[in-house]
Length: 379
Image (cartoon, rainbow, N blue to C red; front, side, top):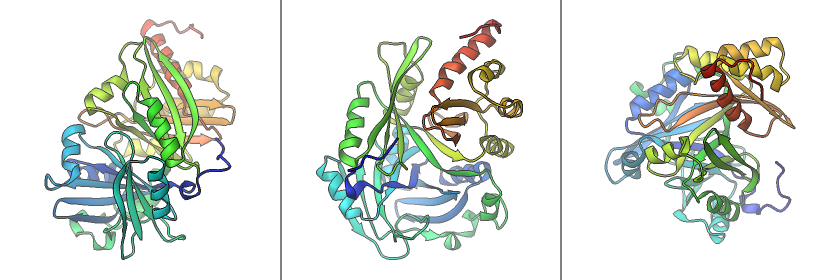
């Protein structure tokens, strides 16, 4: 995964600034992130037609927005999709140049560049992404750290009832001692059949992304196509997935039906210690998918792991995989979404650059071992 030597200059520095989710109930959604995932409320914004809160954990900034009138796009979004990701905001040193380059290369215009005053971004604009998801382009001072969206006020100005208690759940101190989530490793997107190629081409042409990985995954009678595109900077990674219509319908088809179209299936949060993060998050009430014991019976033969490491993985349900660059450890949360669409991932990379595709097949085989009792089965 190397950067192309001649990436379009105005788009070469794109990085995730924040991810915005449209939600039905702002207070309930914010409480879940604060109480269970140890995020801190760092700012708020809004107008006559919406209310928003910004939350942060490590380098991850999430913005939650609830519509208060039908005029705000969150109203129609939530009605169609339920809670979900609506904006993957991309930071760049020069929004006008990046916007101009993207539009010249075929990006759909969502919002023209606007200059802002105050402590937030100096300029923003927005282009279309996939489905109902857009990309707000954000320009901040060169040395500025994580910031807030335009028009937001910092947490000191947030009403007391919406602010984390000092030292309590969701406070900066709580996050510092929290789950160890670092950043957004990648974002997984479900697309309709036939949309994978055009979406990859759109990101390559309009935003200068590179096609860095492709695979065809077969799980029993189900199958899917996947391609990974990455920004020139290597810091924005989208895993794009479409169902294989020559196979039986599977989980991607179910997502598209429940979500009523393409959208973000999961956000993957990086961690230096996936096992430690999972233990902390589990203690806070996050539920993770369970892994059959047979998976770990075979894992030691597939990947070189110490007995202690294998025991820790088994105890927490964390999966493991490796590629030619190293190993990775990952686990997925159980979806609490009413439509069972959106969920989350914790991932630890020890050099690995891929996305754990071997785990899909390995888990399927492990489930078969549990179901049939054929523990002497070997691939």
